[in-house]
Amino acid sequence: MHRPALSVVVPCYNEAACLEVLHARVSAAARAAVGDDYEIVLVNDGSRDDSWAVMQRMAAADPRLVAINLSRNHGHQLALTAGLDLCAGAQVLIIDADLQDPPELLADMRATMAAQDADVVYAVRRKREGETLFKRATAAIFYRLLDRMTDTPIPLDAGDFRLISRRALDALLSLPEQARFIRGMVAWIGFRQVPFAYDRAERHAGDTSYPLGKMLGLAFDAVTGFSTAPLRFASHASVILAGCSLLLLFYIAWGFFQGSPVQGWTSTMLVVVVLSSIQMFVLGMIGEYLGRLYIEAKRRPLYLVADVAGPVQGKATLGFREKGMSVPPSSIPLPPGKRKDGEGGEA
Image (cartoon, rainbow, N blue to C red; front, side, top):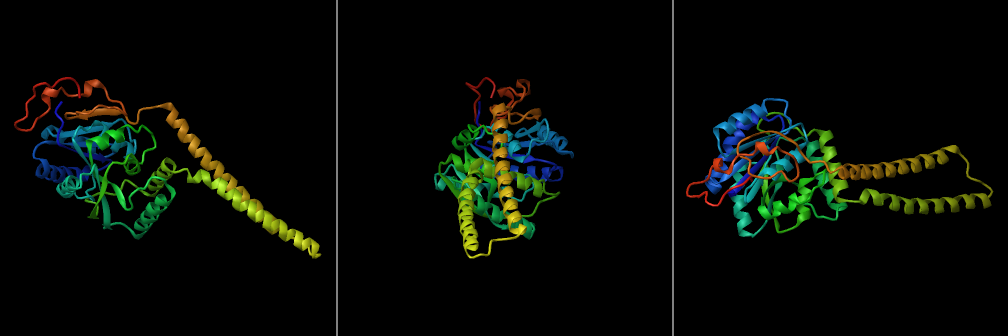
């Protein structure tokens, strides 16, 4: 099997308006960086617009484009996992379809990786154009809280836009959990990882596919996947409440001996409500962690592929696709000067 020098993996959800421009800009950036030795892997995550039809049309015209159609909407992180699982490049660029992350930075990111002998070059946002103050503020708070709560240092203000080496990707693909927070998982695997500062642009077209609800879900996956701090909250709260109870006991005893016993139902009910709230919060967090254990115990594939357009060269190690969807190696386009001798078998 020929391994291209570069794979560009793009998860897509309702991005039909961006795909033509995305394809042109990514192709130009990849060609400038590695010549014709690249592949572009577009993953259609159950889009409700014409994204899949556009992908099929582009794949028919470009032999270096691979379009993967998932069986339903799996979510951004699992769609990205599918693309990473089915790509074959020696280096892999992860980028979103909305073109907020400029693909033209690819050459500079590869130069940074080579100069610093790194396995991961992660892009750090200096500016976030086209985003509301609320989103910028909540993102800043989230990254800093997550950094305080987790044992694994996760870079601040860095999304999924990054360039990773094949050995780092293979290590990432060895992590089979369902609730995936890719940027945290990349940080967890280690190797040499270096930052690359850039200015994030506005969306090229369409609306964000990450509204507040999905952002909160991703944040919760990040916290529960990389921290047990919510579970430790119970023990910390018990120590604090024990101290408060002791102080309250001294206060009641002091009032009794002074002839003015403590009165009033308000303070009593306040204590009951506070304690009950803490208990319910702790039980809820325990339930969330148990629920994740239940889901992991099922060992279901992370994604299901419905259709493929183009030469898929990677194996579905974390998901499922029919073997009949694969393309014989003889039909995979090779760059000039490459021989097919010794190649054979399914990718």
